[in-house]
Length: 455
Image 1 (cartoon, rainbow, N blue to C red):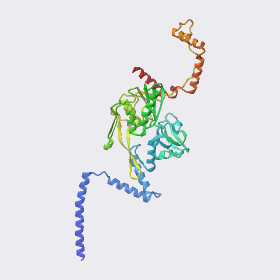
Image 2 (image 1 turned 90 degrees about the vertical axis):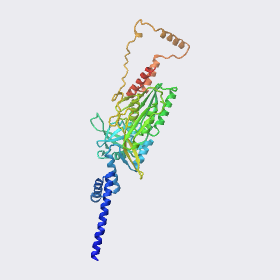
Image 3 (image 1 turned 30 degrees about the vertical axis):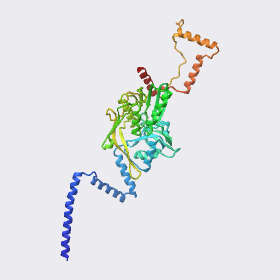
Image 4 (image 1 turned 45 degrees about the vertical axis):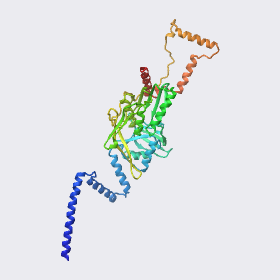
């Protein structure tokens, strides 16, 4: 009986070994031909480290926390813009693109372990406190930023409206760190603003690119046209400190001022990442001159618009060199209401320029200039009319006679003193554009010159 058992065992073992060798060779052949993506050795190392942490770390750690940290590490190691979004972060992202959220109003990225301000958002606590593009945040209250993830820092900056947070920042050109106390607020982002600079010359400010920005911009252009009797002589499109946003919104804004041609194209490894966006007929301004204002806080979608209008010679780009974010992030929802935001492509301007890490170079570069008003000197220089026996202007005499006649008829005359008093009151009420926004004043002057040349 023992002999039978031993013999049967040997036979069974042989069958199993043979089958294993045959199927093993088949699997090995399939592996060689398929070249699977999973790095098995590295995964074994990961599994071993996971087990060591579970058994030996000084404090117990939940499996979920370990795995989420591992996922975040994978994405953070790719580039500053790829990240994992848990349930709360995914919800905050949706709120941000829809136009309302709570916090300080800063668009940020990570640089050398510190939080870098891409741009403050208009009409928010950060903008009102004077936070500038390029500022490096090194402390949040008394907590050092070094060692935090970008998501951790954003979580701290967001909070209940009315609560305070002190930022310690390093600013280029300033010797010592600066402390700024901000009060959190509900951030309601108005992505498009408009006004008339002078009769016939409009101004549109795009603060960020949201899902409705294109439609809002078209409405703004229509309103400005109505204020200008149906036609604009020129337009300034202000993209300064605009951190970007939705790619499709940038395409819509560019399309509003182009009749045809390529606006932007993207190039990536997957089929969906390769896209081309073209303009459709009907330039809202009918070819009227345009100036696009940019600076170091103009990023991503802002650079798409500036690059497209510059490449098509549709607008003059004026200001400072832009941020240089030429990559496209795709938000990929996962099955558990979380998501991955991952860089999937680079984008290129119509001429084939990659803006990544380079930015848009303005046609006319103006940056770091401030103009202060100077009190007028009471001394009035001599003019021709002040010289003895000066030759009179015939037309001026006729106007003077007419004004004197009107005065004699009982109508109120305008005296130099009246004009002077009105001017002084106006000056007190409003500073000149050259003082409040020198770059914008230069854009307006340039628009006027282009309009004159096009007559």
